[in-house]
Image 1: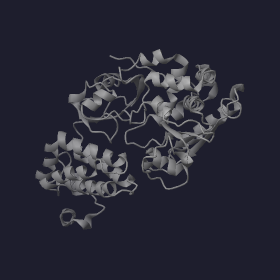
Image 2: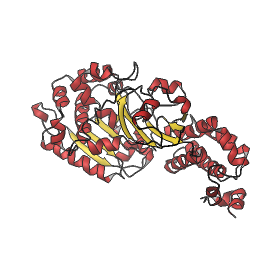
Image 3: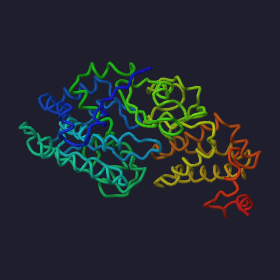
Image 4: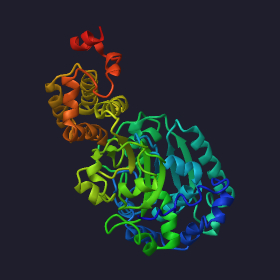
Length: 444
């Protein structure tokens, strides 16, 4: 069994883990002091050599992303931290900011110095007020200690950090929608190119990274590239959070090397709940194609998960046992994507609406065999045609669940409702009942 590698979570169990004194007592800000004595280019090279890949879902090499910034023209450039964690099942960035906010702040300072930014923004999901307050407190502590502000540690480097609370929208997890929101506009994705590295916040060169990506930087600088590359796999280096939720005995955050398997993680989590067995699970949140027990030994790294037909994403492992109705679970996820679609593009706006409508009809037992094929056809109409990744992600759970559990979809048709819970079908409430005579008849 692979051992856990607590790095970002190393101080979570300490008393007042969020306090500056606790963080510095455990070696905090040592990486910043080393970084300030280095050339910015050497810091970027170290992050490139470490193989750190974006921990927000896409898995793009972090150092390479920094390297896309154009040469300094004397104008401002920005670092924006995407802390708008909203993906269903994903819960790694919020506990990081709540339990160890200085890990992120130190990473922000090092990254900003490396890319030549004098103003960094941390865009926090608006609903998590307690996290926003915790970050504000930590930033104030960092200013008082001289880790932020003017002439940091006598180096002549200045850095301002702004913690911004978003208005609460899943779409703002898309980096260009986040930038629009940060500028005070409605959060909707921008047309690319230009990419944020060229014209981002306020049309200036901007790096946008996830919380976990930035929080991983201090340890790389402090402990070295070889230490970081000793963990993980050949192409997926380092450690990361695996968020286990659902029907496991001990759900929670498990910080482990990339390449660990679900079988190993389940062993650490005490296994499935008593008397039940695994039915299906998500390797990277609800916007990734689902897996079954056949994938228990698939290494959880970017290449292996991709080769198996899904995506590692945010490593949000939602675990479901045999009592779960696949159609119901997929319907709930699809309703979320329908609600959170920004409406800018037709494939996503209309496609998610119809996916949700058809799924609710199938769940209630008023659907037909043709509806199952219509789900797949609608997914094809969205995939690759939406303005941003929200549309593509919304199709993943639908198409993969039909592929793996088509007989369960068919059972909802032949048995006139959910084979797991018939009573739920009889009392199911539809938002758009008047649009379908079959639905009206079922509800009568």
